[in-house]
Amino acid sequence: MGLDLDKLVADAELCVRCGLCTSVCPTYQIFRSEIQGPRGRVLLYADYAQGLVPESEAKLVLEAAYDCLDCRACQSVCPNGVKPGEAALDARVALQGGRPKDRLTALALSFFYSPLLIDLANVLIVLYQRSGLQRWVRRSRLFERLGLVKLAFAESLLPERVAPALRLFGPKKLAPEGEKRGRVAFFLGCVMNLVFSEASRATVEVIRAVGYEVVIPRETTCCGAPHIEEGDLEGFERLAMRNIDHYADIDADFIVTDCAACAAELKKYARHFRNDPEYREKAERVSKRVRLFSEFLEQAGLPENIRFPFPTTHQHACHACHAQGVKEAPELILDRVADFAPLAGSTDCCGSAGVYNLTHTETSMRILEKKMARVAETGAEVLTVENPGCLLQLGLGARRFGPRVEVKHLSQVVWEGFRQATDERI
Ligand code: SF4
Ligand code: SF4
Image 1 (spheres, rainbow, N blue to C red):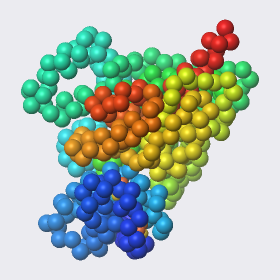
Image 2 (cartoon, rainbow, N blue to C red):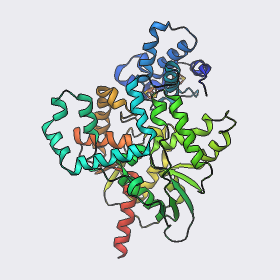
Image 3 (cartoon, rainbow, N blue to C red):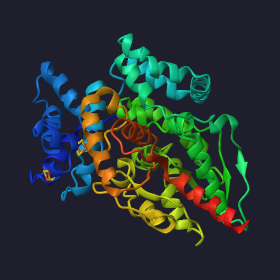
C-alpha cells in the first residue's frame, strides 16, 4: 500500500494557525521555533508533498519529521482535526520510500521480526543481571570509558531486575477465577516480553481474577510500531499482516495488551487496510476487539475489596491518551484501588517516544527532568504507566533526577491490591 501525499497537503489546509497546539508541544516549549512545533511542521511537510522543497533540502524536512516525538498532544487540542504527529510518520515514510533510512536501522528493525531473538535477548539480559556483570559495568562506567556513549545510555535505561520472558517461561492458558465471563487473547508485546515480563504476568493474573479465561498465543509478532516510527512502511505491513492472519479468527472476546503502543497500532490495522480487498475484513475483526489493559479492566469491573497500600500517581502514555483517547480508565481504577495522587501534566510526553531518548538524548532528558519534578510534587511513592518505553524512561528518571518513586505498570499495582485482599481473607 502506498502513501497518499495528498494527506500531508490536506492536513496543512485544515490548519488555521491558531497556535493552540504549540502550547502543548514539548519541542516547541523548549526551542520556541516554528520548525520545532506542530504548525510549522505540517506546513513544511505539505510544501514537500507539493514539490516546493528542492531535493537538496529534503534532508531538513526529514530531520524536522524526526525531531517530532509523535506524542500527538497537538492532535488532542487541535480544534480542526489536524494530525501533526501522524503527519510526521507519513513524512518519514514518504521521504524514505517506505523503507528504513539506513542499514543500521534496518538491522535493528529486523530484530523485531523474530520472537525467538527477543526471547534470546531476554535470556542474555537476565544472565547479565544475575551474574553481577551489570553491577560491575555500571560501577566501572565501562561503556563511557570506551567512548560507547549511546550504549551506556541504553544500558542505563534497563531496570534493576528483569524477569524471564513470559513467552518462554509463562503459561499458554489460564483458567478464570470463579464463573467464566469470557475469553481474552493476551497480546505479548516485544519490549514488554523482553524487559517487563513481570508486569505482563500481573496483567494476565488480573484478567483471570476478574473472570476471564486467558490464552497467550506464542505466534504473536511485533505489532509494527517500531517500523512505522522509523518510516519502514513495508516492515509495518509485513508484521501487521502476520498478526492479522493469526488473530482474525482467534476464539476470544477481546484481544488485550498492556502496551499502549501495541494497542494503538492494533486498533489502527482496520483503518490502514481499509482499501485492501484481502485484509480489510480480517483487520476489522482484529481491531474492534483490541483493548488496552486499563480500558478492558474498567469495562470488566473490579471487586470492592482491592486495596494497594501506597500513594500512587499515574503518567498517561501518549499512545494511550492521545492516540487512543484512553485517559479516564487508569485514573478511575487507581482512584478505586489506591490513594491516588493526580499528576499535573500527566498527558505531557515523558520524552521516551520510541527511540527518541536514544536519538535526541539531551532534549529527551530535559523533558524527563521536568516530568520528574512534577512527580515529586504529588508526594506519591509509586508511579504507574501502561507502556514499556515510558516504564524504561521514568525508571531512569527516578534514578537520575528523583524522587525515589517505584515505577510500575498499572497492572502490577492492581495485582498487588488483589493479593493484599487475599492475604486479608486468610
Ligand atoms: S491547533 Fe490545529 S489549527 Fe491550530 S495551529 Fe495547531 S494544527 Fe493548526
Ligand atoms: S506530536 Fe508531539 S512533538 Fe510532534 S508536533 Fe505534535 S506535540 Fe509536537
